[in-house]
Length: 174
Image 1 (cartoon, rainbow, N blue to C red):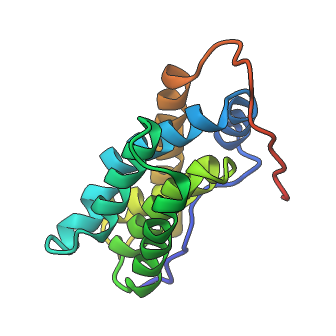
Image 2 (cartoon, helix red, strand yellow):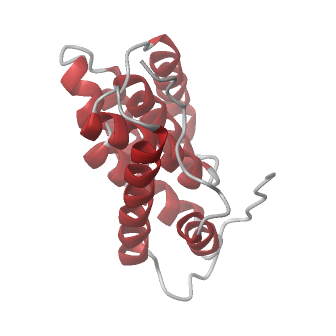
C-alpha cells in the first residue's frame, strides 16, 4: 500500500492561493460558520461511515452551531473542541482519520480563522481517499485533492460577504 499523506494540496496552487486571498477578506464569524457547515456536510459523513456509533464530532459541531446563534459561549465549546482534537488523534484508519482531522480543525475556526483554510487540506485527503480507496497513485490523490479544493473555493465564494466590514486578522505563517 502506498504511503498516504495527512494533507493534500499545494499552498502555492491557484486554488489554495485563491482560498487564502478570499479568507483574508472575511470576518471570523463568516469563516467559522462556513467552515462548520462545509466540514459537517462534506467530511463528517466520511468519519461517521467508519464509526457510526461515535457522536463526539457531531456533538462538537452541534455545540459550535449553537455558539453562532448565541446559545453557547466560547468557554462552553472549548471542551468540545478539545474532544474533537482528541477524536482526530485517536482515529487511525483512513479516510476517517483525515475526515476527523478536517472536522476538528474546521470547528476550531471559531477561534482561529486560519483554520478555515487548514481544514481543507485534511478534507482534500479525506475526500480523495474516500473516493479512490487507499491503493491509488499519488497523482490520482493529487488530482482528487485539487478537485476538492476547487469545490471548497466555490462554496466559500458563495458564502462570502462582499465588502466585509471586519475581516479577520490573518497571519498565514507559511
